[in-house]
Amino acid sequence: MSHDKCEVLKWGRVAQPARCLCRASRSSARFVAPLGCLVSRQKHTLPDLPYDYAALEPHINAEIMQLHHSKHHATYVNNLNVVEEKYKEALAKGDVTTQVSLQPALKFNGGGHINHSIFWTNLSPNGGGEPKGELMEAIKRDFGSFTNFKEKLTAVSVGVQGSGWGWLGYNKEQGRLQIAACANQDPLQGTTGLIPLLGIDVWEHAYYLQYKNVRPDYLKAIWNVINWENVSSRYATCKK
Image (cartoon, rainbow, N blue to C red; front, side, top):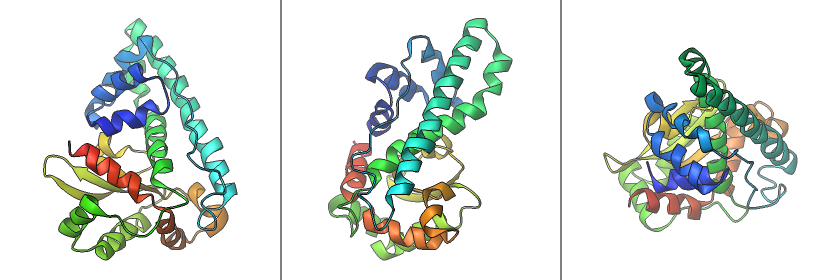
C-alpha cells in the first residue's frame, strides 16, 4: 500500500488506526481484512477543506461545495463510523454472517470517505493549466500528449453510467499511468489496484445545482481548478 493512500486515510482519523486500516486494504478481495484493527480504532472525522466553499467559483459554486462537503461527505463519514461499530460487535461475537452482510456498506461509505478526501485536495482556486515536470513527461509518454490525456479522461468520466468517478491512476507494477472509471463510491485502489492520483466526481450532487444534467459542461469547467501540484506530489510519492 502506498504511503500516499495512508496519508489520505489519516485525514479522517488519528494516525495509528489509519495505518492499520491502510496496510490491510490492498485489494477489493481483502477490503474487510483491516476491520480486525477496529478493536482500538478511533472514529473517522470529516476533513476540513483547504479553501473556502466559494473559492472555486465560477467553475464550481459555493452552494454545491457546501452541500457536497458538509452533507454528502459527512454522511459517508457518519455511516462509516456506524457500520464499523457494527462490524466490531460482529467480530467480538464471531458472527461471520453479519460481517459478510456489512461488506457492501463498508465498501460504499469507506470508498466515499477515501474518494472525497482525495477529491478536495485535487482541486484548488489556483489550479488549472497543465502539470509540469515528471508528471507531464509521464502523461506525454503514456497518452501521447496532455490534450489526448485530457480528452480521454473527460470521455471516460462523461461515459460513467449513473453515478461514479473518473480517475487517473498509477499502475505500480507496470510503471505507467492509467485512466479508469469506478461505479458509485468504489475506491480506485481497492477495486482496480491503481494508486489514485486525480479523481473526478461525476455523481450528480457534484454538479447538478449549477450544470443541471449537462455533465460535459461540468467536466469542461473542472479542468480550470485541477490542482496539478497535488497530483504531481501524489505521483512522486507513489513512485518511491
